[in-house]
Picture 1 (cartoon, rainbow, N blue to C red):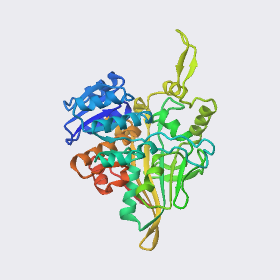
Picture 2 (picture 1 turned 120 degrees about the vertical axis):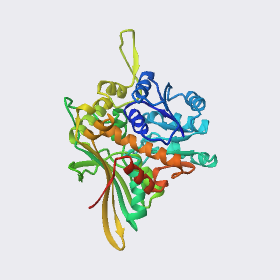
Picture 3 (picture 1 turned 180 degrees about the vertical axis):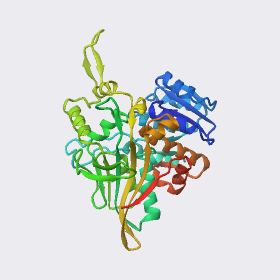
Picture 4 (picture 1 turned 135 degrees about the vertical axis):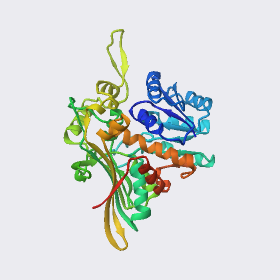
Length: 404
């Protein structure tokens, strides 16, 4: 397997560190708009299977040419969701398998944003599913941790733990703190703003997909391994759009443990218009400059990849499932916890980015060995879950199951 990894930020760099310990690939080209970032990721490895390149992720032709020049048969997208569609199209043009960790962007309903879906997450990609399937090509979408591992858990629950499923609820929480920072998100702020301020989507079998208000339906969820109770709220996320396509459940939700201070900060950014992506004109030393307010917010905050030494605590991603097994009610939480102290000591990557990065590497290895295969635009739920969960454990990062 020859892989083009686009994006050498925190997650992309963690991917290189995890992949370097595995023998399943022949070459991995690390490409980024900033050539210094790509070079730094490669230089740290001392592994001649890795090579650095510069590429603009928004330039489909340039990405397709890079895939062809290095004879890469897989494109792994580790950029933010703005670049999903150009990279998705570049992979198809080059005849490469495509893998991402976040799907094409949504667009709220113009008149009823908190009742009806507009353009949903992944709609643009699924609109081209027939083309990929007819070509015998594979796009594995949403293959990070959430979405990704959480979706694998949903399929595992349906296959092995339940006869009927009433509800699947993705629940994400942490007790991470960052020394010296009052507000320092542990993940890409551009993506965080997008998913937290857009209308959350809920799925119900008799209603389909519909939306609600941001931060709605708060609940306290007790997370394992010492994290404890965290208040979680509805947030827009790909799992709600992916799970019902392959797993039968009466209801699917995604709730995130954000904390009141984080929520209030996001509300303030929205109130001030600082969450907007459309450029505004501001004075500059050499004249007016056009900038995106959201990009300014991101530039003012510390890079999440640099926070590892200051972070303490654990992060938990998991899938809560309620239903019936052998005629009796059952409720389980399938989860994956990463301790920041462990991920920093073992890989030099903070817990949130490492937890995201390990899952696409596991998926690539399953594709390389043939344990996973398929054609079309497919989510993680479309594949057998047991090989993935077994290999994740073999990577030294076991998952857990708790009866509720």
